[in-house]
Amino acid sequence: MTDDRLMVGQAADRLGVTVRTLHHWDAQGLVRPSERTGSGYRLYTERDLNRLERVVIYRELGLSLESIRDLLDDPASNVVTTLEDLSAQVEERIRQLQSLNDRVHQMITAQKRGIPLSEDVQREVLGEDWNPAWPTRARERWGDNAQWRQYEERAASRTAAGWSELASLTGALDEELADAARRGVVPGSGEANALVDRHRDAFSVYFPMSRQMQVCLGRLYESDPSFAAHYDGAHPGLASWLRQAIDASASAHGIDPDAASWE
Image 1 (cartoon, rainbow, N blue to C red):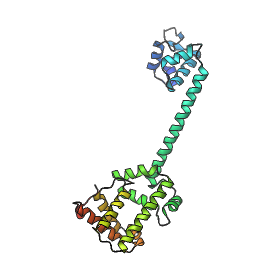
Image 2: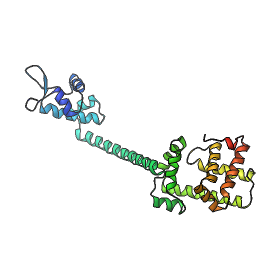
Image 3: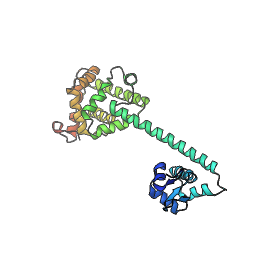
Image 4: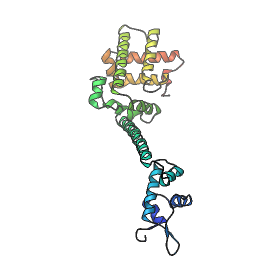
């Protein structure tokens, strides 16, 4: 630095641009160093630096070099109006980025909790029997597969009202399953197969579910104490009945339930 003048490298550092950029702007006649040292090195004066700072801001706002030259050099250009328009565009972009950031935080929450709702709201929406620890346990068990990632992506944007609607639909299906088991509907019958199809459709709201995946879930319903307690609470033996109904439906579609895998 010489007094209040900067060489090209120093000016680039101050403004956060490259030396190559300053050379380009110089070649374009946009901002040229006004002075030189005795050795011939170009020097930017304070006035040059003020002009450079404006160029940097305009470029950050997306203006072309030609548009910037007009703003800086054309006496007829309305700088205030242009800046007001650019400010409005920046504010809109900030709103968009804030919305995007909110969605990212929802996804982070979903990753951590499985459902982006507080535990109290989960119980209010999904019922007192709901255990907020279930999604976390599910993530620990299945978090590395594609279906869980699909579940999380959909869960991240679902509102409390959306969860409430799903809970109502699931509750109604559980009641129909319990009623079928209570009436002695035979697994593999037309009525039982229709309920199995509805069960698969209900779960496909969370991720696309194949018949083989459904067979795996049926096993889990019967073997896992938490799931078994949920279904058997609706009707004693419902967990086993549902597993048998799912297996029978799968067999009717050429799937060996004993050999079914998560795919």
